[in-house]
Length: 242
Length: 242
DNA sequence: TCACATTTTTACAAAATTGTCATAATTATG
DNA sequence: CATAATTATGACAATTTTGTAAAAATGTGA
Image: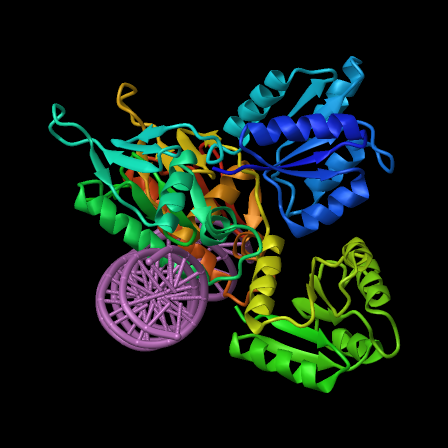
């Protein structure tokens, strides 16, 4: 999946270097020279991850990170701090302010990419392109295919076809399995930021997803949590009293 | 769930348009032409949300928002700013003054409704997401599941299913265990602020919760404190005489 | 632009939950 | 022990939530 990364770094040379490497790794890159500029960009497009220099011309990176964490819209964005300092205190306060990781300059492009991947895997599993396999389903984000294990283990897995939205929905649900998601959360994270569509639209897509899964014998994976939302789970939700 | 919304907007056409759409969405609507008028209305009835135009005849919307935030009685009311300006600075200072969100004119009715919904949702009382485990019960807010340890320790915990209200009630009682709660407190914190529900209704839900817990052998966890209310406790409240 | 595929909304049916009431049971108090 | 106060409980209607299909809207590529 195309991961949008905002690079907030005032030194042009470094900014350029980073941007180049990120693009080469297949990411969408946005650049900002200072906090104010960064804020405007975020207002416009919500990035999936922020690379944040420790020292900015107009505000400390730390303070900027805190602001991102405070706002509802941005508080879930993973942040990686770029710092030239090696002092432990800085590392600690950087992490306290909500950074997910930090990299000490100078760093190799390889290290940068690796860290980004690690953070994405931890914080935004649906963005990392790893194959997810749960409950007899296997979803491959790279090839964009979904397989279901057949009962007969000798036969090779059966591929099922999903529409674009159903695919993203399933991907998200599988990436965050065993968790309840409200319709609003699903709209935010599967459909995207700043969309204004009805909550109930989610139901319809859940329905279509279920229909396809039912057809291959996977009926209890997508569960309804009444009053809250939906959940992907391999645990049955059997009624207790019988 | 009748939500009362105060619309503070001097232009009659826009005010009318907004009011119409809000009513259609099932809200109670109050309208004010200026800050002074709005103040009087608020004095009379406390709205659940304020839609506030950026520019008012007698005061800037920003200033009005600040005043609402200063007063104890009104400081918790969510505010959505309506602004024709698109300048970033305005957005920022609007949010800094304590607005919960802003909408740039012109906006679609759908967007308006969606934003209102989002803001109201955000304001709902939120409890910690940590797993709570007491007295052989395990409640997980993330997956939205409740397990009870079976007597046979080798078997895995049994899941029990609760209705939305019973779940919230149990969650609250467990989060504040070993403490008596009056019915009024429970209504406030579990059902939500200003709900008009009979005290006795709490009894019924306590009853329902107990019934489910009894069915799995957890009969003494939810206790009655006569003359006061209810309490979740692992200590038995045995009668003196047996 | 048209045909086609997908997405979103709408409308209604089905199911589950909820609040209230009436009445029974229990407890406190003199 | 009698009485009043409080709580427990079951039933039921009203409301809310979710499932489902079909229509409307939207996007897409030839």
